[in-house]
Every structure is written in C-alpha cells, then in structure tokens.
Image (cartoon, rainbow, N blue to C red; front, side, top):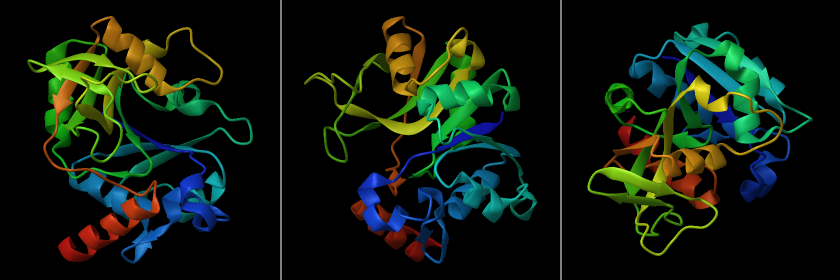
Length: 229
C-alpha cells in the first residue's frame, strides 16, 4: 500500500534551524532527514509515497523530484498558506492514495517491520491501526491504554494516569475514516474517536523510535545513523 508522509509541520521547537528550511530537509548524518526516511521506506519495499507538505514545501519537492532517484514514485499535496491540520491535509491528499494506506510523521525515523504492521491491520479487520510503544512517560507523555494486547483508548489531549504506551508514529487506515470530513482538523482526534468505537487496532513495537522534532531528538538520530550506516 502507499504511505503518506505528514511533512507540513513548522518545526517551531527547532528554532532557527527551520527559519528558511522545512523540517524534512534539515541535515542529519550528512543528508537531509527525508532522504534517510525515503531510503528506509525503499528498503521496506514501498514503491509509492505521497508527501503532504506545508511551509516551504516547494523546497521539498525541488529536492526529491518524482522520487526516481530513490527508486520511488513520489506525489505531493500542499496545504500552505491555508493550514488544514494533519487530518485535513490527508483528506485533501485522498485522490493520490488508495483505499488503505499507511501514515508516518515527517519527523519520525522508524526502523521496523512495515510488512508486519500492514498484515496486522488486515488481520484486525478494523478501520485503523496504530503502532504503539511502551513508554511510561519516558520519551513523551503516554497517551495509549493498551491491555491484554488490545488498544482500549487513545487520547492525546486528555491522557489518563493508567496509560503506559505512546503513539509510535506509524499508522494504517482505511480511507473511509475520512468520509464526510473537511476543513482543518487533527488526525489524533479521529484516532481517539475510533479507539472509543473499538475500531482502532494496536500494534506493539519494541524498537525505540527516533525523531527530529526536538534538538535532543535530532542529536540522538544523528548519533544512531552515524554509528549504523
């Protein structure tokens, strides 16, 4: 299935690094971050990528082109200067996607088994799947209640003390979850609603995640990539 990359964030936590550079193009271990991300997706046998770009998104398109340099087919959907949020930008991009597709955040580097995640989605027979990680408020505020191998509740806005897991940053969805929706809204709100309806599956991931949304995260990924590639 194709994968959508949510690359429209402003990168405010990175300060001057994102003044005239979109977060996806910040250099990490000798190359723009999104180059590392795309190589990882290619290694996991993806062929179609849709990049949802916002601020300075044209610079991302200029850097990547049609994706042939990475052995991928890349399409673009832009929501700047009118911001649509993670949910609204996905609705706008639906014509470029398929009935089922994966979603990854544009600042996440997730070296996991994507095929296993895809299969778990189909096996669940639910409308969406969220990869999760046992966090216990370590890397970020825990926001998932996961018990007996079941995702009971996801709530990013109002997490409860018994939540020990966190959204890992990769999801699989049916396009039907966006039916009738438009405007500016957050994908997290859709996930939360689906979890309350029993339509959000959970896939437990044990490999830690890397991200460049913060300066500390950027430094950690720089160290990881420099040591492993």
